[in-house]
Image (cartoon, rainbow, N blue to C red; front, top):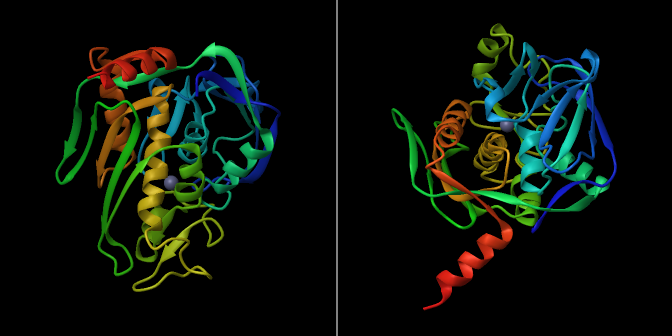
Length: 296
Ligand SMILES: [Zn+2]
């Protein structure tokens, strides 16, 4: 896509937050070029919280943004969908502190965006292209990004559960592939971990309508899984939602091995804190470069 975009018309959704369990109403509205994605807390005089790596507050179990003490919790699913579907600019009005979980996947947000439609501005889209590899490692978990002229993801997960085990996914993120292969994958949890999570004040809004619950050897949800590797697809969805905090379309190959929100956030911070790691290119500059590199 050559030009910056926004939504054509406002759309809205109501639901509950996964962790806080609070009722919430959001509206996705058109925003001018170069706005990026900005949350507006309508219960706090439309206080703005930009979806930027600069405002990452908490990264355990979900990604939360905070600006001057104002919180937006569990941003990753909505941001993943906006980013993958190519929405550069939008205001997200929200009347509480957590984004609604809806069915636990990105699918309802993809459907909302289809209702909203996309509108292109005349301003040229600028991409953030990775120039040299960066890696973040903790124990047996690792996330790396390598230079590429495309947006490529490799995601590996391992969970010691008979229905999960080791799963791996390779994907070039395009709106079409995202909508069919990634967006429908739901968030998930393990029955034996639920009491501890509740004690931590988490998952107060969770139910079988918005999360997969793995029991010892089965799935508690009626209808089972949407994909045999739904967990790996959902981790990919989460990963994209965290990468979206770079604030512009990314060109690079991300390889995530058992990484979670904290490591995703650390990678984004490393990239954005060192301008020698990346360059900012327009679609046309990129097209010219790719054309030249193809000339023998
Ligand atoms: Zn998630």
